[in-house]
Image 1 (cartoon, helix red, strand yellow):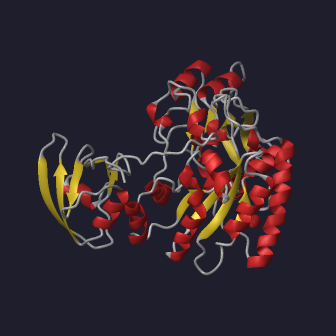
Image 2 (tube, helix red, strand yellow):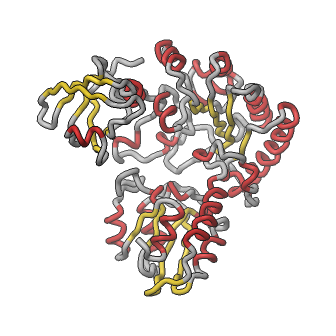
Image 3 (tube, rainbow, N blue to C red):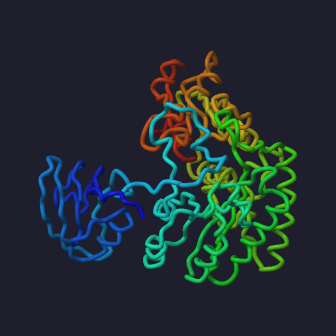
Amino acid sequence: MSNLSIRPALITKVIPDSIAAEIGFEPGDSIVTINGQKPRDLIDYQYLIADEILELEVLDTKGKSHNLEIEKDCDEDLGLEFETALFDGLIQCNNHCPFCFIDQQPPGKRETLYLKDDDYRLSFLYGSYLTLTNLTQKEWDRIEQMRLSPLYVSVHATEPEVRIRLLKNLRAGQILEQIKWFQSHRLQIHTQVVVCPGINDREHLEKTLLDLAEFHRGNIPAVASVAVVPVGLTRFRPVEDELIPVTPEKAQEVINQVKVLQAKISNEIGKNCVWLADEWFLIAGEELPAAADYEDYPQIGNGVGSIRQFIQEFDKAIEKLQPEKVNPPRKWTWVVGNSVEKAFGLIVERLNEIEGLEINMIALESEYWGVAIAVTGLLTGQDLLKGLEGRDLGDGILLPSVMLKQGDTLFLDDMTLEEVAEKLQTCIFPVMGVEHLILTAIDAI
């Protein structure tokens, strides 16, 4: 793989009433070895602690080494969380895709925003996408031996010359052989195709989707699903790139093309495996497909059906909670990206039926990124200031937590929640998920 050294696994949290808590582990302690082996990552850790008898080498917060022996049930977790899932460092991307979001950011922000992840372990653990272009034989062997499936793979094109053009990497042309490897080893991948107009659309898109569908056969299809996603471009992208944005006309063209291919695939292999990201319909101004069209939402992390799922979850949560009255009355500003303004209108109407509750949804574009149609997760602190200054914000802002760095209060432009709240002279309440949104709105938290 790489020549990165394996660092001790730094513990950041000890779950109360767990084995680790009973033994006396503390945040700041580190695990060096488990039964004599240094875990490279969270995958190794989970595999090694499955034994009933564990011998651990541990460094405490002062750097002193301790040897511990633990007896437990084989399926019992220790109750530890770590600073990172990768104890030997991140496998970074060796491609130069012109549409890479990392390269479409302004300079001078926090270092983690510029890390190009192409790590199969994060793909297995968290569903992040990788390209397979930098795996050594050792890593392929590990995927096979540990049955690391499913993985999530950015395909973009199955024609070698087109994929090489997109990834700027000669190894990119091996994608069909690599998918055949997964098929022969009975392992699965979820795939994505980022459509770049003029490069991998039209006849190239058709060939890619039909090629991938051929691997969606049998009881354990090698290709479990395909997400078709529009390229996203920001005003910070390199001026020399060859990309052009997706227009409403292009979005409609792709929707029509993929719908025909979905029918063809379903007729030929008996089931569909290709889904369009919600963004296509938002850009084209079309109604979203019905919830049933997404089946079991295999590509929800790629924005395929996420809006429909949110609406479904809202309907279930409001029925469960059945709030009838808010006392004292509350008036909130709910901030979202303008891509979901139309879809979330019915949610606002339903919340405003609650006596004493007033929700004002403000749907913002992102001047920071230079995009007219903005998804909620990309809105920055500067976008909030631009869009909300001088407005009546009521008792405060309900802010989808997807705008913030996980576990922190940082927006993508490095502004903090506290800074934005101070400048707007209001309270901001991050909300995670539908039920949290409703409970916060009715002041039940």
